[in-house]
Image (cartoon, rainbow over all chains, first blue to last red):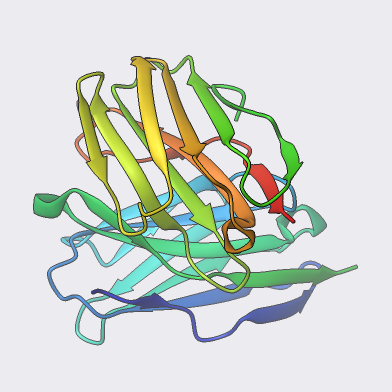
Length: 112
Length: 114
């Protein structure tokens, strides 16, 4: 089956710095991607999504970049705050199959 | 997410016991899902239901069963729990009218099988 993986299992950043979390996907037919944030003891929370016909999408303090050539997805968090500390994982979907595949996650630690 | 609730939040049980995890949603979504999450692994789909009369197996349905009692309720049962079913279980919902069918998750149930 498809694989959705992350390059770094743990990322530590200083408060105020920018964070970049990466995700690789293997299925070139995937056409929709989501980033989720999961805080300790809570369920995954939708952060931002992107369609395969886009290269970049911005939200509030977050930006998702999609590079279809190398099947790579990244989440950029600007001015990282302590409240951003969580596990972040990506999910990919092939619409015709209506099924999401989830990565294992990267833990983001924000140091004060 | 208060729109998707799960009960219980934590459960410890013994091998061989029957366990039911419940999920309710007030989002008005027609689609519901059950996932399990193990340390270091991505979410794995157990069962999903696109409406009250539709139930489908996911990647890891063995040892589990589900019931869609109403559009807003979807329960997961472990008929005879075993230790390797110790995991975090999440319910999710989505709306088929949503172009992207984005899934929204409940807070999770931590299940420990001794």
